[in-house]
Length: 222
View (cartoon, rainbow, N blue to C red):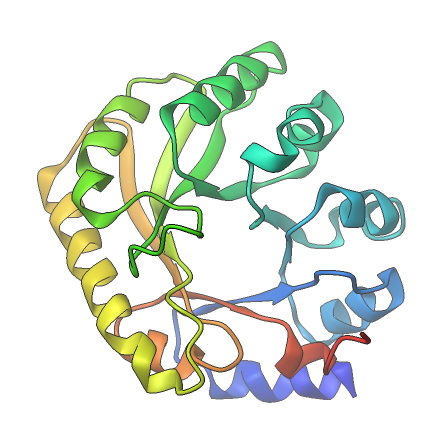
């Protein structure tokens, strides 16, 4: 069923929109079935989940980190984990960016990252508020072993997916503004927005990466 779900989603998505399998708590077998269906990017929230599944899957797909870096900094900064990830989508401070930059220098790697935007300005959520995005990007862009590749946002988790639209619109406006500034070491290529309940609206508003879990794997067990 997972393979069929992926195939259906890939047929539905417009050209140029990349599908990430949000694989939080999923088994290696489930992820492998998604890869067989055409998934090329596996997105993980927790390093502990990566430890369980990566030895089986390895580089059969690209790996994106979509969790909160600050709360998992010790594990994320380990050499073996930085070597696994092809992108970190959730950078929201100079401090964590500097740590990643320093560790990536030691392994001779330039880490692609997205800046996480707290588009709903929700104090309980990670991400930088919209007003501070440009300033943060200008500071992080000075680091040599990090490459800013775009923006990511969650948007508030309302029951009605349509409620996310204003936040996606604002993040896309910011994406376009930063792109127009032509800041050195910044390539505004990816706009990661939308999950299972809101990905269609996110695509309408300019997302070219969507992070989908439930619609691929089904509901998680409680």
